[in-house]
Length: 103
Image (tube, rainbow, N blue to C red; front, top):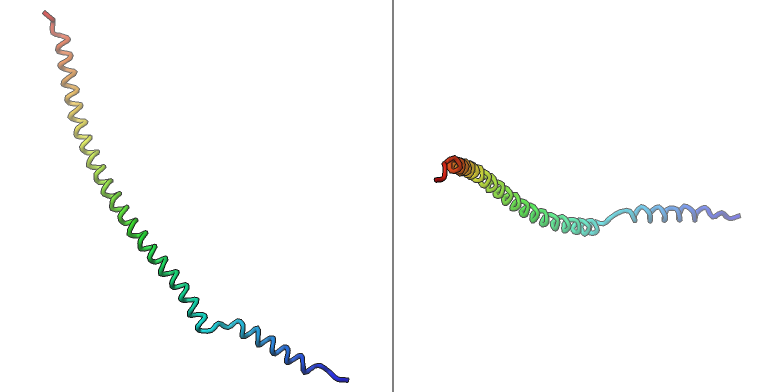
């Protein structure tokens, strides 16, 4: 009776070695993958800088518009006071003309 025991350890050893070695990455593979990731990061960094520049410009324009709006509001308040004064004068003059007898 002949046994096949020596074949099983050899087959098992080949399978274990194949599985174990297939999980290892070479330095070249890792460098290639890192290069891809670095390229993506560089692209995103460029886009982020563009967005930061655009948002900075938009903020500066918004702040300038807010300042101009505040100045315009103050000017309108000044003019409203003047218009109210003129309106009162006109009303007083109209009342005086109504009181005067026409002759």
